[in-house]
Image (cartoon, rainbow, N blue to C red; front, side, top):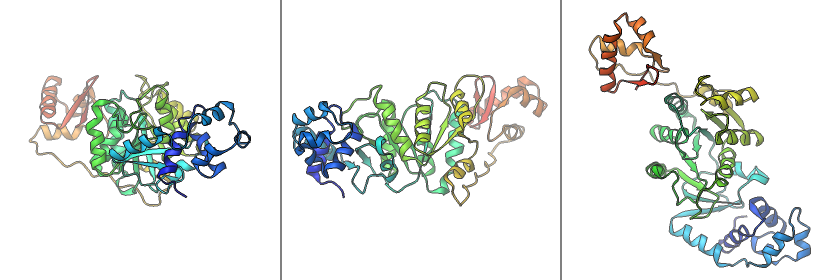
Length: 367
């Protein structure tokens, strides 16, 4: 039906009542037809709504539907060119509406959020390794031709890498916040947030403008990431990770979950391996994600890396470094049949020229 300005303000005021929450607000509006009518309901009528107790009823008696709080939230959003999309509006994504008791009652959206798009969530550790970032790049780059959007949480590590790869490849991307959309967290991702907006993407939150991040808001944010997405993919997650919360929420919503396997030492993939044991799909190619999406068309094949303009023997050495994984110096020495010192000198020149990159443990990858 959609809510007009007055009813949106009433809904925002309803959400300030202690004990109501998003699902309580949705149930009350469904029961009485409009947010403003909830405030007009009698005590008996309110008590007839399941799980609406005296605390909520008392709170409703202490606030009016046209209270200043809701109106100020709308004004502040309007000044910042932030849309306010409620559970009942056409702009509200249907996948979130299907969550019922986990649905946010309202979304604050900076930018463009297509309510009909199919989305893949890419989440993982904030301490991403080069392996994790490379996996992120390879998986997302292969989804260019599928028409999906990439959604994540703008956090450091895998989240930020996912947004960047999507931007590089021209894939629409959205970031879901655990704070108001006017507070960029972490602060060093302000430029990334601007790039998302400039590319036609969106910053999304259920929290009003000015809401600071907290230990409570991020787990709540995770259910929106999972709920927006048809598929959630975890790339690098230790045993205790917010990414695992997102993945398990996605599974509870009946959505597909995949995890990228990693090294058995170092701890960054322990959570991914646990998800795979629990039944998540093992994902090691873009096609695996396309299969989870049940796409009829195949993913876009990755173009072969162009041969760089290098003279011998640097060109031959560059060709020995795999395009899709790291290689140890000992194996390179064996393949190249060159003395280790000479080989390391040439690898250093290739690194300075930007063609290879050295990783911890004397591993090398193409840059």
